[in-house]
Length: 291
Ligand SMILES: C[C@@](CO)(OP(=O)(O)O)[C@H](O)COP(=O)(O)OP(=O)(O)OC[C@H]1O[C@@H](n2ccc(N)nc2=O)[C@H](O)[C@@H]1O
Ligand SMILES: Nc1ncnc2c1ncn2[C@@H]1O[C@H](COP(=O)(O)OP(=O)(O)O)[C@@H](O)[C@H]1O
Image (cartoon, protein in one colour):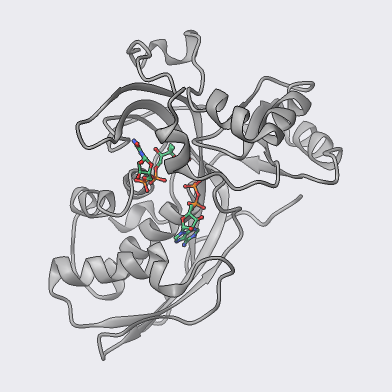
């Protein structure tokens, strides 16, 4: 499937920010290298930002209320990371302003594309500007980590090599690339995959320069494929064209291809029961300069 590229928000009205992008990510590799006492896993992973994602609109409210103004299938407003992010920023800064928030969902949920986390990151960046709360990038990253391990990288705003639970970030300089991203039509719970008895949790540490050359993998892939055979089927199908692997805890799988034309050709030949997208990398978050 084709999709519009992400654009920059409209900032012409000081009372609102419309068309704020929330890009997807891929985990180019993901190694589980240990486990913390609280059960969270220590990782090494490479995050790649994509020129594809959700968009959000924010309108200032002076009464302090946080309202999501549209329905989102499968995500009640009170559970939405967007609403939780807005409340967290209020609590952290003592801000008495509120917002109406519209979330235009494009990314498949439970896909390992980080959609919910990116929505939350965009909310923190946008409201920090709309409310004039003035937190720095580092402060927002720390706040975002309270919402989920994947939130900080979207505030960091660049391709990154990540350690810790995904919050210790170093910039990665990667050449532009085209990908085919394929959703095998199942939604995978991140917690379910990390809790699995059969997950390998002791992969040896690598150094950043080894990343391209070394044999990396996604340690979560075998676990997800065992529980969701369609993920393995999707990898096998995509691997006919280029090396294919799962992103994050799944369910989406991806392959880097040589050109936009190759991506298009492969995406349109995807079996009907799945959905495939032609996607370009984005080396920076479109709102990177706001922090
Ligand atoms: C696997 C990754 C790779 O980028 O992405 P997704 O597949 O979710 O996109 C992330 O580590 C997911 O980050 P995120 O989706 O924010 O996870 P969180 O909400 O913080 O955690 C959900 C659950 O996953 C487990 N979890 C998550 C991250 C981590 N480093 N170790 C864990 O054990 C915990 O059981 C936690 O309760
Ligand atoms: N704004 C949001 N967008 C998507 N999912 C959300 C959102 N807020 C909360 N969630 C919850 O988070 C779960 C996983 O979200 P998502 O980020 O799409 O997947 P993943 O973590 O696999 O990348 C969803 O199934 C949903 O229950």
